[in-house]
Image 1 (cartoon, rainbow, N blue to C red):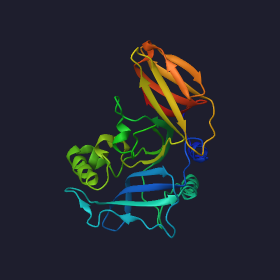
Image 2 (cartoon, one colour):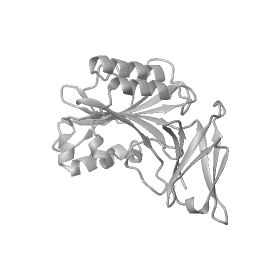
Image 3 (tube, one colour):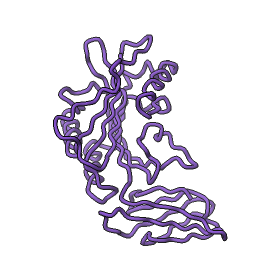
Image 4 (spheres, helix red, strand yellow):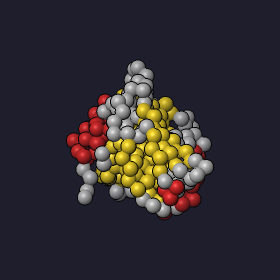
Length: 274
């Protein structure tokens, strides 16, 4: 089933509600932009990360992390990396504006973007023993995983030259990585996209083993959160679905390897590695 912009907006608003998966007050925005000779700014990748803490007061002017533009041979673009923080409501307004007009406007002028289409939300687990490609660009996705909402550039008009010549993409990625910890060459199909990362911070989980082979799962709730019933699902040699209040849950030895997820209703709330 195709995902719509209205659905993406509704999901963004739902996840932003305090205590659903975190307590967010702002987004850190990182934009990798390409500039043409006429000054037109084109989006090559944007990452917006939900965070605690209010954004700075004032206009929130973007910080240019590349005073000297990144130049590639055989390219008409000069690249820059920009970072700034905005309120959660600001981002909701940006997405609502995009839904109405098709413009992606985080500054005074809209960015030039490809044909953006929303895709179904994803839950991205930490790497641990099973690396996930998204973690090459997501910010600090080390703990409970992140929900990712995405506007996908289905045209790739601007980025096509990078996809055709992997050497140029590697060169651009290396220069970007020297400025921000993002490896865009590992996600070439995401060039031109806009990704909204919402880390799970409402709970903290841990898995411990015992000398006899048992595995125990502990969950600590955020101090602002109201504890609620959750479900732990474990898949491995012996799939199991366990209902628990998630303060402490013991699993049998034959469930000691695999991947676990903790769910609120039908939505993944956290991902743990057993």
